[in-house]
Length: 457
Image (cartoon, rainbow, N blue to C red; front, side, top):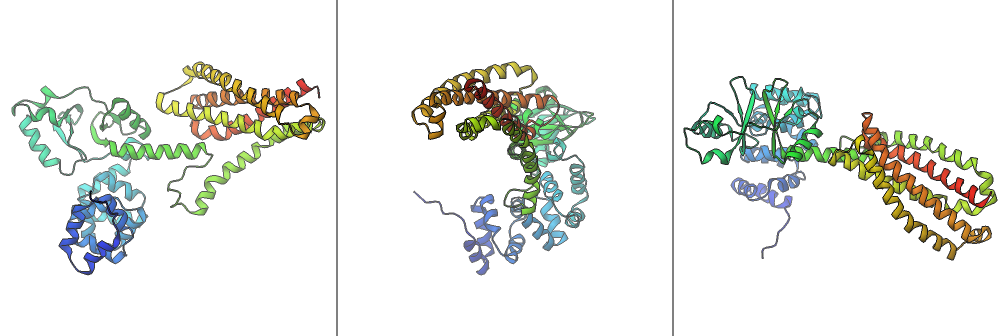
């Protein structure tokens, strides 16, 4: 069986040194363009420019779309206007808009000046939509058919429009006013008689989104209805563009990354970790660290309020980290699951009691296990301070505090994201810092109240 060998720059450079341009073209035809893009990132700028001169224009254009933003900017600085124009003719309009939107103004202007008038208008249209909306991620490269077209005319249009279209598997049907009135799968009319009208065989129930629809909502629509492409219309139901599944994968990755950052109390970054500078990372983290540090004063205030109890039974202080940690972990578990439930299952305020009941049941079952383990552990292996205070009594106090603090953490973690969503805020953004503050304070208060009541201090 033939072993797969990873690509490397040496093979490409051998073709360049030997001036074997045909061999270079064949090499790029025989390998995956995404893997080639990763390898080409390591080439010297001179060699990279040579590639763009000798490769087929559709290959070099596709290669360009998979480069990092820095490499794209460097290439644009060295390519001539005609070279840029030819490349743009082979790149999907939405991809052009994506990398232009992240480029410095002077480079963006240079690209727009090199583009054909039609391409320039389409790019400006995409750039005009608010970031994060369906309009900003849609493509204007698609196949559109008229309801009055016959199958024969439709096939001819697909041949004309399909080369640069994002997909031809699904074609959308418009009327004379460009209003979206139907859709049809390619396979559905390939077997029809040539004189059959598209209006007779199209599907009139078309799932669609508007240009102003949030991109995350557009992703949810595609997931719910299990479609690989969804049309985008304006407020007059006129077809403007399409969103394909590859665009949605990028959206999902972006939204998940943003939620992970928020849940970790980090301001979302535009670039990846490796592409972000130290100061960018500091700006993303420092505000939340300050907020969490200041909110920690609640915890300090509770401990200060029970200083006499701690002095009376010093053994109690040794269990504070465990109780706070257990409660915090329980709250994080619940909030993570509920936040995911909000995103996937559409949980809202009507589900509050279901969530609370479920978290209560989980707390009871987990609590029984934790209570028994803690009582046995502390009673059988007491420290000197614990033994002096009465190992069994301290064990029961700590075990009971763990159970109640954990229950409070789970109920808080389950309830808070839904309440936050109800007031129009992002559950992921608020959950981490607020749950940390509330659960820490609650767990300490519960612990000391139980200790005071049970130990009589």
